[in-house]
Length: 109
Image 1 (cartoon, one colour):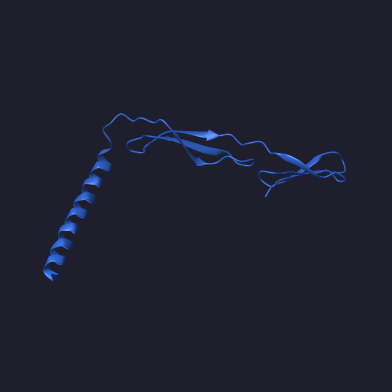
Image 2 (cartoon, one colour):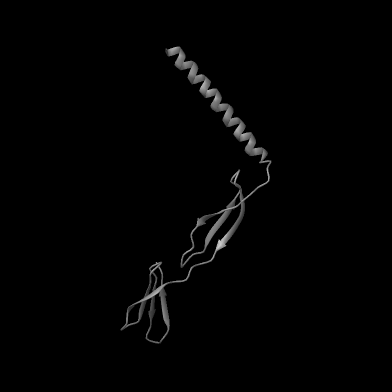
């Protein structure tokens, strides 16, 4: 029984080594098919403060075909204090305050 386990282990190791070698050789040689991309993957979501990124990948080999920038979204301000005018952004938690001179001050987390 012990000899059988050793033989099976050796065969499995040989198969794994062969697969690793061929996968590495194929990756170095590159793919030899026409790239087709249908769907976009969101790499980074856009929010009020930062732009996002989306990528189009090949269906077969997952190579990045196109990469585009997603523009920032707009703040969604809600009036939270009337006396000293204050608005809070419901999306990012940013704060917009009206100062005594009539201008606006912004604070973002």
